[in-house]
Length: 402
Image (tube, rainbow, N blue to C red; front, top):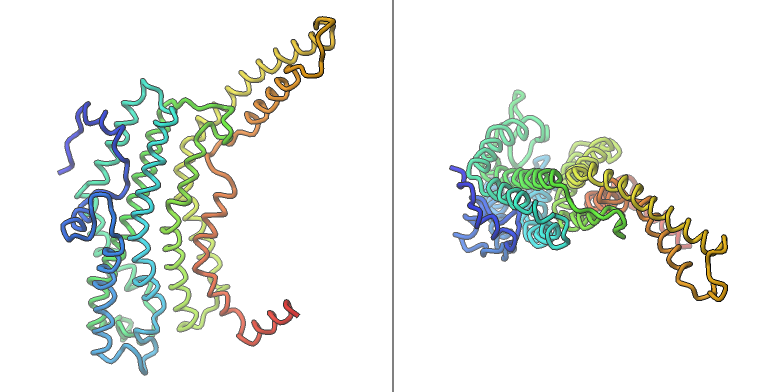
């Protein structure tokens, strides 16, 4: 059953507590009981090692016993780049990313209050949004549904029909159009892949909780400042999500790189054949991370329009008084123009109005988008070497250096 709705005192206490997307749920409690985590999510290396020992190490041992770790088959275990990228790199990254997200995102969420963006009469609604996010994060039913999705669709539908290679491999042999699993293949299907897919889906569920939280906060009338130097009313701190989710994006890039690598080396494909997939993954990751921030676009647009009106009126009034004083004889005869603060005040007024003019309707910039795209694409960089031979690469390097 979901936890009961928190009391008023508990909601007030949430103001001083840490907001976290990861410190909750059945899996987190299992980590704690197994002494693989403390109350604040430390010791990620223990969890990563335990996951690798459970998901990858048995596959190696069984493949060695079955004689499929190396040898005559088309795809032996030790040469399965996609598997090793998934279980030895992406899986630990998904676990290590939890601590990074916890430490970064709690500061981002608390800054709404610390910067005074939430008016006093709306703090109750903010606390309700926090409480709702924490209840959903701790939901037993949500993670149970993820397990059902993994076994019902992720492994025995998507993996067996879409992601396996049509070659003789360490995990199975295709016969009469059917994939016949080896002992290692059964461990992969029943333990390794479900564990990985559950952690991955769990991350997307956490991203959904974050997006829902931002949507609820965006329904609060925030105290945004049109002249804030970040040019987005004071919400510029939200762009820090690019740092918080960097390990998660890199893990997604590793998954894509591993999948493409196997199809290049064992399926005869080339990197250029995956342009659509690469562009699609990058676009999806950028939208998943930055899309929720656009929930504040309406308030930012309204803040800009209000700033244009208010500062436009103020600038008009000041400019008229300046014109009357210095150009129409309003100044005293003995008052010197040089050294007068009026010129600097007029310049400051112009700078303030320019900031309002440059306000963005989304709390991120093109630089943020590029940062996320590059983080996702970095694991694909080594695959560019497959587009030309070592001799060709050496010739090109000599041509550049000589």
